[in-house]
Image 1 (tube, rainbow, N blue to C red):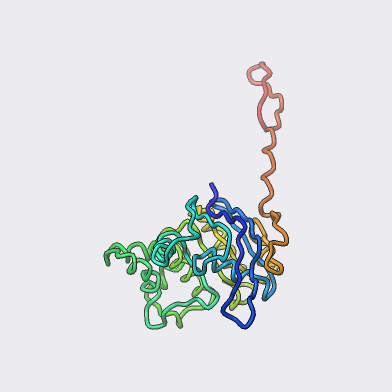
Image 2: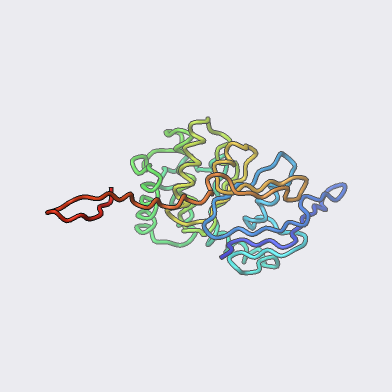
Length: 255
């Protein structure tokens, strides 16, 4: 099933001195459970595309289907409800609240969802365990490393069990080692939770670690291709057999 389907999407900004075309004729489908990167230079339109996918902005033309539902003409209230229920966001700047503990930051989406205190604390601790940070639950964001902070942000994005996770430059503020660890973590969570994960990045090395790379150029999709991570698994080899003799009777035995 397609979690995202874009048909002829365009976006023109008219609140400027001259109209600016940011996106034009975007046709794209992303299936449930895919691990995808959207890449492009500054000004290519990738951030505008990200905002539309995250229901933070609306297209000027075309149709957007999310989980099979046409959302192009939804009201602000309807879009807000969908964001809360179906989409998790991971930001470059982490966006954790410094006065709250790690576990309290993960709980925030559950507070807005109206979950009871005991239940949301249990859920938040489960998520911290999922990203390997249960022992840091009581720490403040300034007491953990940048890589750990981003993992907390990922746990928070998973809080409401979204079908879609959008990660905007999730490794932009991290060193190479931490960046690799975060992408590995996203890949693992993609396999464990089966959520569709879309990373927006300007870094080709990060994009190549996903299963599919969509390149945006001048407001259009320039290319869309699978990476080596998406290569089919080799067929299982047939077992080698050898003849053995048991009690004078020859038979075949795998070896």
